[in-house]
Amino acid sequence: MVTKNSYKDYEIYAELWVDDQTNTGIFNRCESASDVSTKTCYEFNVWDTRPDPTFGTGAIVDLGKVSPPYPKAGGRWNTLELTLKGAQMEMRINGQLTAKAIDSTHKEGHVALQFGSGIVKFRKVLIREL
Image (tube, rainbow, N blue to C red; front, top):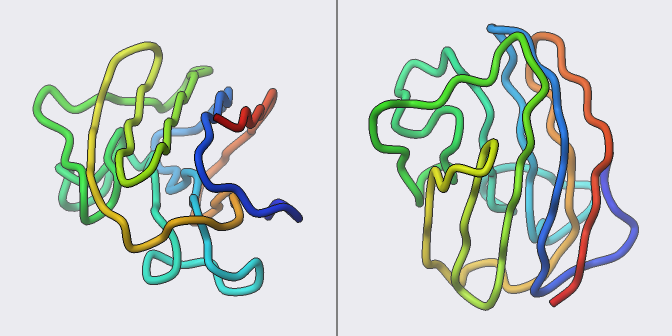
């Protein structure tokens, strides 16, 4: 699922349920609604079993590592809170700050809900422009 609108500075609040094997997340500031990838967007990750857990659940892939203890999202409802303002980005899971990053590669773009594998259910996905 990809937004029709493009966003620059915003916050996202989302609730999601995943199983232990799920690879999901939210792509942000995607340059094109039809080309969604880590090369064209920022990926805010939920993947408990990622081989490199430093970019697993709670990370901003390739930019904001998660420090141990690594959060786990599988088997329950979780909240994600994402903030993108200028070059600064933050990710929170269940109220806990899990990653920060500074990067200005993607200044504006679409938001996309990711499905890589497993069972994932999103509900109450809210975007608030800043």
